[in-house]
Image 1 (cartoon, rainbow, N blue to C red):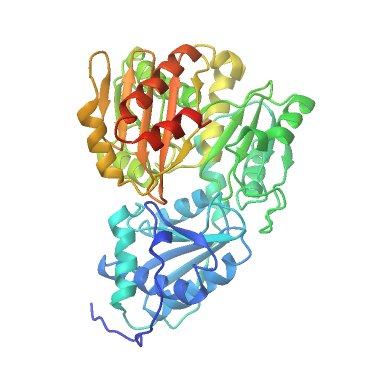
Image 2 (image 1 turned 60 degrees about the vertical axis):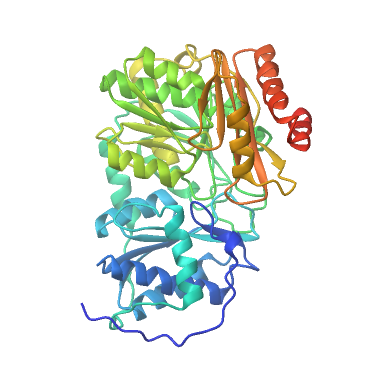
Length: 474
């Protein structure tokens, strides 16, 4: 393969803070058009050095996304790569389409961030980048170290990926009844896809905000906060829906409401997904991230599976599932990945919802009934504590040295997690900002207070500001 360099070196500022742990994402004042071109050059180099020749390209609903996508297409083609354009789609549809082209894809999206942000995700050989590879893109730009081939002379190929995706879903998911479903797309790029797929199954869909609108008139397309779900809840109750489905801006995360309009916590949903997989595949491995409840591990043990906890981050989850062939993996943030011989091994909010709907139909249960064995936990949301300039690794090391491990299990995979017989607490340095992420979970409010107090007691001697912030955070 003959390589060449055609790019004249340019001076470009590389704002490292938008080169995050899992993707490139930030305010459009930082992710400028010139920086997008430079990122595309760096990505082209990575594809070429990996001996790849084709790249699928998609974009979300944001106002700049189509323009950025066109710019990336031009750069990739000029670098010698064939581009397959699939238009304004969800990230899962991009992942699906990439599988037809050696697993290579670039998605212009800032996921659930506000309209002022944009970003870029990508796959090489079917897998997302790990943090060092994302930093490698920034390094290559700073060094102006680009590799190219002879430019591709033809225009980007257009691929209508939705048809194949819809056919795959219909073949994979077995539904017989015409269910009532309430769906909220939050004006992202996934709503129209989910609506169309559900209607293919004959579902009666009350589609809310499923038209792509990069202005995001409802605010950031993030369904994780319960107050964002009021309209969807009203729809579930008014329509008598089997469930409510809320998708984030690019559709890789999902939030589910039961038939009574109640938000189902990720811990309860993952416990049910684990049960579903283990009934079909005894002894299978189930994976979740360190922010998840002890209830998931207990569920896996109860259904004779193997449990593994890994660090937070959808890219780490995807890599682990691929390497170890675990049957299911989930994240507290709402990423759910089925890898059990069905699905395609990537996070797809719609697919996860359909697997749930299929299970309810097969068992004849309502969602409330199916979740009855997984009682609601008493838990805090992710709480963000300012670091006050404290080095995260120093705080972690100090904590580890001071913990009394009687009746407490210590996990240092990602931050400091303490597991008690009745719950857990975790503190971890942020991958993206000057703060710590803290979360507590327990079976009762009294146990939750005890776990919080334990963390405060350990932190107080050396880090009183952090201890005080944990005391008042909510």
